[in-house]
Length: 356
Image (cartoon, rainbow, N blue to C red):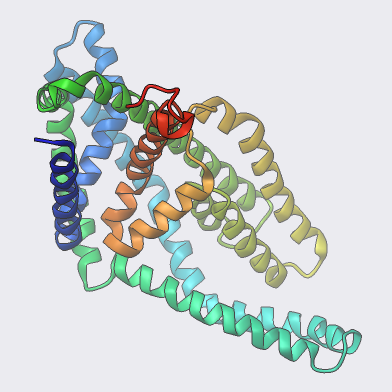
């Protein structure tokens, strides 16, 4: 098979994969989630194997331990979170009215200070931009959770994901060996090297970022609750969870937290305390958590991660979000490899390179 046929073969395979992903996204969600859990827990299983346990026993212990940990967290945190989420949803219209009432004096001041008609033009321009953005975001959310699929997906995640994770963990070495046997023999070592780079990127980002998000969620939730913010645990955990998206999590949490503080606290020192909690969280993340848990091994630019998450969610729903970061890592490694080959080729060197 000549290079052109190789290219069209792999392009057709990619098209079939994307089509299947689009059509079967809801069905694939627990399988993708199970594979993600298995990938995250595989180092723990390998460590137990090195201590003398069989692969099956190590997998059983790790899966049970992980399941019990998740269950314990849900039993302790979930009731409080559910109550706060329900209360926040009930009081959301009141918060919006109160924020509008507090903003009216500022709008009047701006209307007096700026030239006539400027504030109205700014409001109109803001609505022109915000309306399409809100509509697009709503479409993404509906694509992720719409069609009555969300409940079925949650049930399947709770039931099927642990089973898939167990079998994937137990058979991980055999799966890796089987996939390795399928590699084109001529380029096997090159492909293995790129897979090692993808694994290094994913392990650095997913495992490290998961710990960062969990730590930040606990920090923000505890901090906001201590300063007396209503629904502080919910806002803090939401901020930590969404911190998976660079910059967006902290910005979302800060906006929601400060908005609630403006409505709740009569004095400005309450708002200042909420801002101080988010500032401390940023210092903790930037100076300790991210350097130690994620480091500089990732090689994924924040803008690229944000684009991958948005594109994955818009195109393939929840399963697209799960696959977004792995896909971004694979594409990033592939682009760097192609660029490296180009810089060493005659196309770049003008005949003095390798010519490959």
